[in-house]
Length: 329
Ligand code: AVJ
Image 1 (cartoon, rainbow, N blue to C red):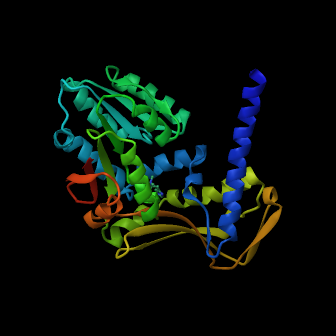
Image 2: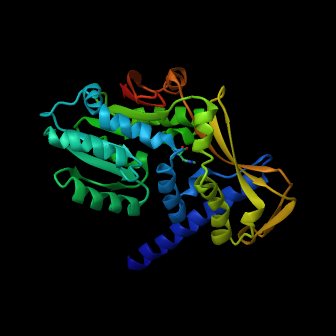
Image 3: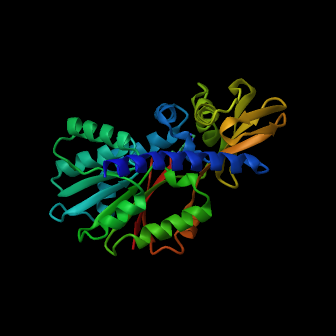
């Protein structure tokens, strides 16, 4: 048994490694080249993202925090919570819980009966959050759930208690509209009729506000984007020279999608040992690394069209930069 579980662990790491190298290969084989944004988040990438959330240009975090700080009772009313009726507050990708803590504080203070169930792939992130909540909100019952969102939700479907699902921070914006549509359909299928979703999304607005959020003056976002190449160097034995690539974000306010690219500054060849091959980059050639979709009511209505959800309430920050939508079934 011990042997089996050990070899399973090795296989899992091996599988992850193979998926990573395969996705890097197929992305760089494509024309135009691309790389998946999910690989930003190694230990260094996690730390850089925390820095991004604190940047003056990255308004998303502060706008949504303002909603959670100043419109908490509006959120609670729209979610139709009652102090005496037990519910489960489930968060998809909780991160550092900055915004959620504002809601937890008020719920605890007003004696609501609930458990907080943060779900994350990273057990490290969950442990940090749990320790922090023990310090700051010791009375809140926290039950961390490590794993894939849908596997955890499927297991939670058995529970007869009503659930509130939090999916905040415009995390959905990294998905294409078709992927988001599929995601919402699957999410609603994993919920019971009385469950509700609180979906936080960044709104379409002018380029002068959006672009700096992805092109900050301190170069943190540039480092975050280029860290993808550093990761390929470290994990797949590549020789990307980070000085010969630069961060290049774009935003078209009609389309409403911020896009991040890595641009090659010169003609160059990069070898990736794990793939046993080399890739040519022309001067000015771009690798597409991320989309950050911005939304409006029409787009949200479209992505939930096939899902068993209806738009119930929309709560905005004072600048109307960000929206928290409450979706009911
Ligand atoms: C975590 C996906 C919401 O797209 O705004 C921040 C990630 N990328 N700066 C976003 C990100 C560059 C972020 N999300």
